[in-house]
Length: 250
Image 1 (cartoon, rainbow, N blue to C red):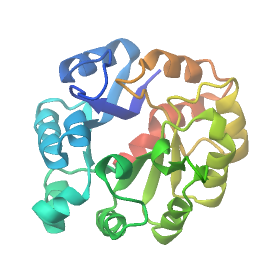
Image 2 (image 1 turned 45 degrees about the vertical axis):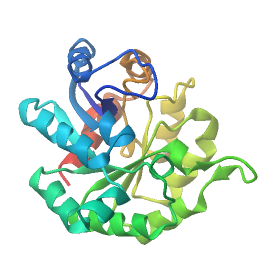
Image 3 (image 1 turned 180 degrees about the vertical axis):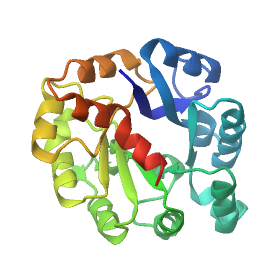
């Protein structure tokens, strides 16, 4: 089965012990699973400094055509080099995917930083990725941050990908798929029985993406979930690579 991976972090991660420890190992493990393309962000861009990690990723991609760059965007750019510099970097490196980590990088979905970054994504036709954990609130108010849906409505030309969407929140991401045609769901940790069959029956297969969630998970379980799903081959192909391929070409 041909696979394009929508969700990988590449590089050495300093905050947690993971089984895939560096760039070379991440690339090497793709071959046995048949992963031909991988949309990846760099661990250093997440946990150390966005611009430095993105530079490492861009250098890696020059020599490794299987890696499709996903830059981590953050207010760090605004206050150090300026938004214009970020836009130039995205254009120069032909980046089609960006990722935000509001909680980890110290801002919120309701901040002006987010609307400024989404305006750049809209101008450049970029796909914006967010972990489901970034929009899920705990504490006094448990549930999804309503600001996410406001942003989906405000930036209808921007494709949003929710990564690591868990089955236990399926009624919520069902709602996102139903209400917002610019929302896609990446299924790497959604390992409930019949999850693909039920979702495709409700919403079709055109906005579901296969991903591995490397290095936090092995690709094996997510490969198995899709391979054994009782779906027509056209739907499996959409999820396995075609939908992500279309986002690459936007």
